[in-house]
Image 1: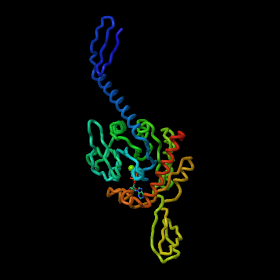
Image 2: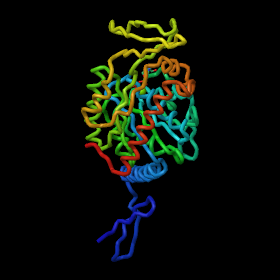
Image 3: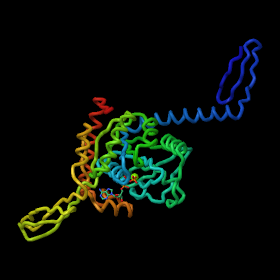
Length: 341
Ligand SMILES: Nc1ncnc2c1ncn2[C@@H]1O[C@H](COP(=O)(O)OP(=O)(O)OP(=O)(O)O)[C@@H](O)[C@H]1O
Ligand SMILES: [Mg+2]
């Protein structure tokens, strides 16, 4: 009868009759398997450590692309930072990462020290990790095959030195693919997901898919945010007068100016209330509406987020309300163990 003894990374075979031990001389394949198992174990421990150090983790998803996930992720992170919280953003979008640009970190490279990746610091001290930091040239498309992508995400999460954080916002690529699943399975204790939608039917249809998807992930839905909800125009007319403004789709809006002649009207660029209806239909909270604000587009281009360029503006206020609603949900979910499955 022989016993196989593993000490450190050497394998030896022990013969109890003779008392002899000899090194098994693990073949290269066994050696590789052991190394992989060891690396995986270390990564698992690192993930547990990260899970412990980051109090709240929030995923931001949508069924459809281009509805404003990255704008919302960065906005939530900055709004939380504005309220005095320590915050990080994990940009999981490997094929089109644009969070660094929105956070004023375009062209930045990651700092690696003793094998640990250190996040870059964006506006308001928000820590940012993005696949964009690893790209040689942002114009080169990253064509990643599934397994490489997943491996990269796990490495990404496990090897980052986030330090202690109150909140981590995780920005995803569009759709319901492998990435959310990997993150949900890798990171312990995710508080929940925020689903971003625009008011159009097609975006809503896709966000319904995301809600259903959350069931398979067993991650609670914190709620739905309606982005690009309405566009407010402000103007001056004769004091205390009645005006008619032609809105999108030929819809006219009656507005009155005040005693100084100021007026404002909010036009629904797409439709209205769709996010709220979806939330109601699925019995999940409606977290609020964010206005259509061309400042977001400019901010995406020049690297100064709307919340930073206009911290007291309407968009910043709308984000603050959504943050309050999310923080309220997290409070509830941690005390009541809310899980929508
Ligand atoms: N509330 C808003 N008002 C005006 N423009 C907006 C708003 N939200 C987002 N945008 C603009 O819409 C475009 C898409 O936004 P963003 O990149 O955040 O979407 P996304 O859902 O992350 O896209 P993807 O699916 O490609 O990751 C950007 O140009 C952004 O500036
Ligand atoms: Mg995005």
